[in-house]
Length: 321
Image (cartoon, rainbow, N blue to C red; front, side):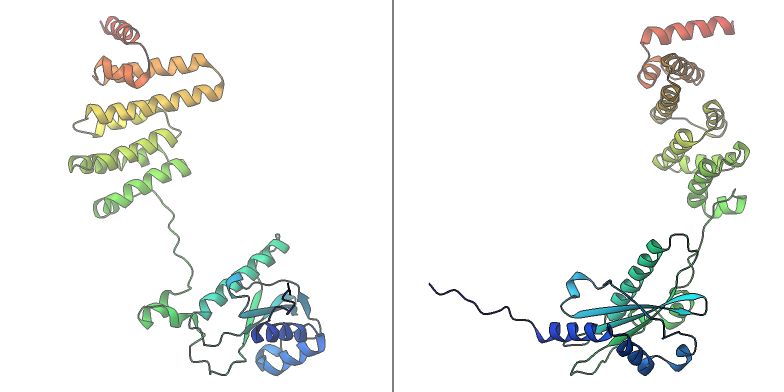
């Protein structure tokens, strides 16, 4: 049996890629290449006498048979600067190269950030694309050319600083014109920024209006978030609900009562006191009795025995009398 001893074939592109990378690892060759191709205005600021070759590749694995890259770090006055050389060996021009290049640049910035975690800023990267192919390049290398939008919108919004939305206590105009956004935004502001209950109370009439329009699930979710994540007294939250909601529904109130109970249990466990859990359950049952809920629902929500709920009810009646 004769074994096949022929060596593995290497594509012409891979040979060229290796040659390109090897040549640019020679300091004098790299310097001459950059002097040849860098814009003169950039060369005035870049120190090509001190080029540091970075032994990394940032090309996608899928493209490593078609692309090869070389990264040099140098200095621009007291700043770091990277010169990124990408050899593009695809047989046909690729319109999506700007998007892929952006991905490579982000990887370089991430690499730099890992190497310099205390740095407050990222370095400038100047990319050069080497395209030694027969077919002429016919696509724009401007990332904007890939965006499907009117030019005026691209110029105004593309790659501009992101819009920051920092929730603040809402006013009547916002509640009237943006009831959904204003209510859940205020709920998050209350929980994360610890805004006061009077500020939070502004949204309750609007939540009641949404509930009257049949948006019960949304309202319950907002109240649930406030009760579970907020650090206010559950009794104060309950007072706001009783004050602003016209027609409480037993099923929904039971759900909220369960969340009161769960929060109390969690707080009791954090303190490591089973007695605290029992006390919280009893207090929740007392509040639910004042809301007029049936004892069966209270027992189900708090986990207390029905007999104990009845006992609490009798004790409360005697105290009222």
